[in-house]
Amino acid sequence: MWLKCKLFVRNMLRRMNVRIFLIILCAGTLPSIGIRYSIISSYEARAISVRTSDVSIQLKIIANHLITYNYLQGSPSDVINAELEQLSNLYDGRVLIINSNFRVIKDTYGISEGKYAISQEVIRCFKGESVANYDARNGYIELTTPIQSQTKDGESMVVGVMLTSVSTDTIMKTIEILNHRALVLEILMIIVIFLMASILAKLFTAPINRVTQAIGEVKDGYADRPIEVSHSDYVETEHIIETFNALMGRMKVLDDSRQEFVANVSHELKTPIASIKVLADSLLAQPDVSPELYREFLEDIVTEIDRENKIITDLLALVKMDKTTGELKVSLVNINELTELILKRLRPIARKQDVEVVFESNRIVEAQVDEVKLTLVISNLVENAIKYNKLHGWVKVSLDADHQFFTMDISDSGIGIPEDAIEHIYERFYRVDKSHSREIGGTGLGLAIARNAILMHRGSIKVSSVEGEGTTFSIKIPLNYVA
Image (cartoon, rainbow, N blue to C red; front, side, top):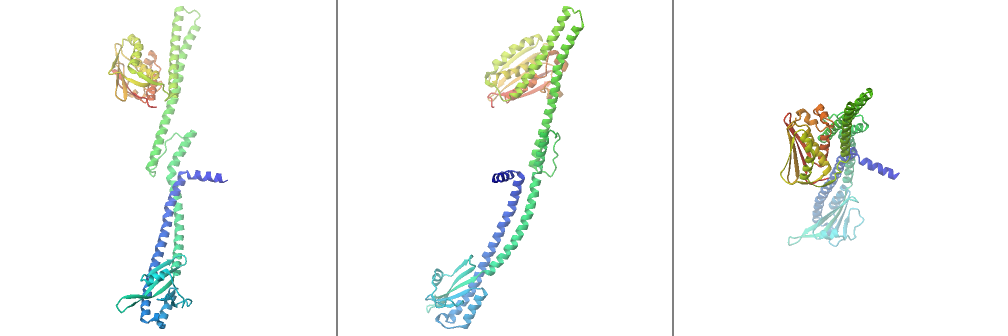
């Protein structure tokens, strides 16, 4: 049971609205409690000070009368006794008159007369020092007042002490009344602050709760709309909601891309199969097929099978790259030698189209890369530059580096890319000229594969193109791989 309560309290304290509620409640109530105690303490100190001052003045007057009426020498005086009784009754206190022999010659309570009163306060008073002590526990103020007379030389001499105890009951009653009223007011304030804290905690966490609810709807698959942000929301939550809306937009784009990708895959895989079926059905429908026609149809079937195989190979490469993001087999590679080797393999294809392939390098470049994936990048970009080129055209590969990155530009004199198509060229199965792509065997996956491989290396790829004049792809990859 205790463990469940402990877990419940801990879970409650982890909630943001509970923490805001407690902060506001403490910020409102603790200062009010402190102010109440401060005011009561200040009043008590001020009241004690005023009471002590008033009594001290009257005691000094009576002390002078004691000297005037020779009260310490045993001369009875009804006037002095009346003043002492009046003072005792007025402040509900007690007055003792002590002579120079420390003997009590007058006690307003009538119980200590003739006895001796020796205390530290009395001794200090005989030395001319007045003392005032406040006993808060017992509720009285104790004062010592020196009784001084003039000597023949004109000097003052302490000949007696007035030891006075003054009750503070009236002050305590006033403090009690003030404390009770302040407590009632404080309780009302706490109730108001409690309600305000509850409302404010709910208002402060409302936008976050809205985001949480929307995330729950997304998790359940129901929400595909952006969250409406009202003007009453504060800046921080607006940033959270704007970021969430951007994430929702990105998810929608990815979902649309996924659906389009599935549709494109289905279409691309079905097209060669449909062609193969048409060719096979044509052969079967003709009872007497000449060997030449039979061979021609078989060659077409082989071509379609090769096309299907290339699509599947590219798809597998792309899927494998998506699954192994960040799992590069990095090694120190000479980029110059790697590029020369790739171009050597592609030059036969370029010669068939009478395209000249040129490699320019400003320096020897060595970098930490995945050789297989970088080979895919360079091969796809150079092969595209050759295939989408003009007759008697050219392809130039330029390699350079600084202290942090190496850059490679693949330029061609080809057909170029329309401006409205540039933002789509990295999409899977996207082709600018579908009929021309089919003629040269393009799958629409090469640039997607190249871009993924570059991003895995923490690099970047940019393209600039003028339709009908040519295209330049610029890649930038760190020399030292950072996971």
